[in-house]
Image 1 (cartoon, chains in turn green, cyan):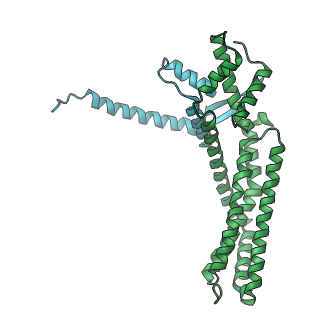
Image 2: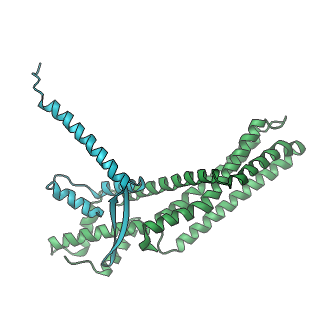
Image 3: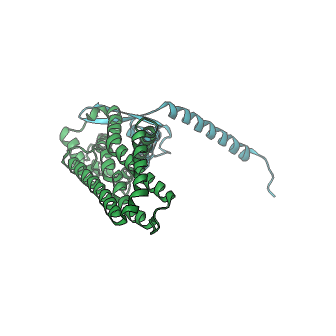
Length: 232
Length: 88
């Protein structure tokens, strides 16, 4: 059976890119599938040219084209990253690093209990600015990573999921958290339970950000390197 | 086995009675890969790369379990179909 030429294989990469498959790992699999099918079709029907065989092969993916494949692969990747995130957060909790986060929790709790009593207005201004500032850093980090990805020639699906979606959680949670903290504070001061809960929630948020930014990308990249050594 | 090979093998083994579509197979393969039922290996084939799927240890055990469940189900169905109950 005659194999497709390099130019024809390259044209298949352009073809799958045109059909919204932006990620190199998925492109590689689909291009090989199309190429194998095209070779078989052309072998059985020598009168059919490359473009015609390509269209026949593509039609087999159904009316939605590659959409179902993209959707399923993205879902599987999101699930995998989320599972790894939970696993890594548990491993941080079980390690010595937890001392830092418990310290942060106690510090925040003390601040929540004592500081508003001195000056409620200053407390909420500083609190809002700090959280807002953290949100800006998260947005800038996300934008930087997306910009880096766009400059790359070959984007892998896990990178896209990791930097486009996961980081959004922190960005979206900040504003409701500021409003909710203000709401739970009454003129008589903090209810201790609220102070415990909010300081714990913020600590958890920073634990999440730590794992999300510093642990997960490294971990997933390592796994990917083992699995897809040929890409590196 | 690679995805295209799976489709062709299923077709050949069943004399064309079972045709797995590409749109159905890939989502399934990616889900099984995520569940660690399958593991993958990329090999260079000429001027392109090919992704091979293989059952993991967990996958082999699950396959055995599923097959024995299917066998049991088929035996129960056989009992129903072979029973000589007179119609009312």
